[in-house]
Image (cartoon, rainbow, N blue to C red; front, side):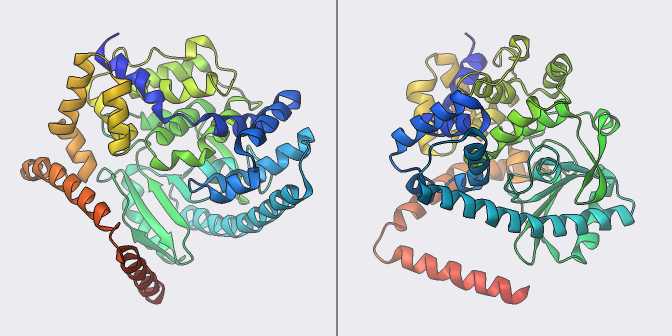
Length: 409
């Protein structure tokens, strides 16, 4: 096994744990298998309600789906927990009505200005794959042609959306906005942020299919393109722990329209996404038990280049805990560890440009020096937060910043 393939195998570190896998099986499978998974989930967690209430990764967004699965498969659930799930479903339905109204306003305004739009993620899937109120919708995500990106700000500005900064965004790849009530809007000009990944814009737009979202005509990605985007974006998103990507991918793969798996494999090869897709698809086909053809499971990173490995490591490390895992448990060979050290100490210029959102060559040397200094400063700051009174100080500062933001809006 080569260094790149070893890194690919170690990326399973980001897979959901056993408790979350049991929860997903209970939500997505049917019949006796779903009921058995729910029973095991309850035994492992002790109290499912307390488990959800104590979770900080966004699992509460799955509660409406759990409610639907419980009714569909007739789970044996105590009345208090069933009431908790029912209230979560009602809240999500009310929330989705507000989301749908904002979504209709944005799509309608862009249509009036003749800006072509492809709806992504929740905006595209909440009404096409899920029952009403089942899919938690955290943001509106859209894809527009690259030459139309600069026109978006004044259009959505009239609807109460203001520009906001997006972390690790390549210049010209996407713009972020936030509504005065807090809803994020992300407008993409390219499907993937890291520059190492490639997307054929012409093929994406020509294959997109018409749909109606919030009673507004719009286009959505065809299934294989959408699955590729879901897996790649979840792999690179630190918020993947909310597990919505798993439900989206599962329902997309099992939809009546079906997937062209041979076309999907070709898209993975062209996009240079073998490492992310093999990692995420491996979880869906393995622990979760999704119906994935064997030929669709691409060989994990055997031909992955150094920039591809860097992009994968950047998404998966997630701080000192991930670094310890990769060094002591994930990577065994000297070649793989050398690749990790090179990424930490001297990454490729393309990664630096992406990570810090810069295109100026003169700044590259400064950013190479800035990375270790920023890491040390971050560690010292986290230690300082443990000092007596520090948490109170930072909490008060956050409250003051939130008050100032609301007054400005």
